[in-house]
Image 1 (tube, rainbow, N blue to C red):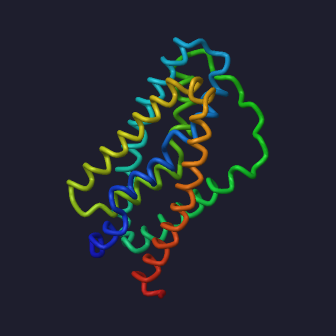
Image 2 (tube, rainbow, N blue to C red):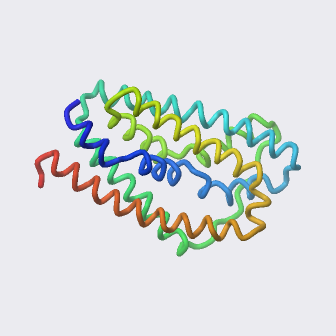
Length: 211
């Protein structure tokens, strides 16, 4: 597909990590996970976290490659996908930056008793977000070769492992100063993501001949 090397140059592996960390990473899951498991003992909480991790990895990989195949079958151009990805990343980044100004959310409904049902509730949509899958699809479609695809998948698995660790130690993390650091890092990454999204939108518009 024409334009792939140029699009990939815009999204270096460091940027790939940033996008996946923001859209699928631990910053967004710590608070909800602690709230959802507030009435669960430590052993069951860890069991739910591991199962949710496995379900999330399977779902996001299958969803990413299914989206890639559909995009290719529908003959969606790289320029259009770059533009769409830029818009998605812009909305998500802007939401992350403005999240601190939103009112507090009500406490969520308690988890089901069955561990697998509870894991499903954690995995979707707390771990696997629609915009996270959209981000992965955009990255996979813009991948020019198997080596880069393997690198994207390795980064994805790394982010999901960080999610697992965040869930396993969520109660300790939220009880210390680490949460403040995560909020600051999230805000900084959100601003950078908005800037990158603007670049992607401009690149997509240029490649489509609009600019």
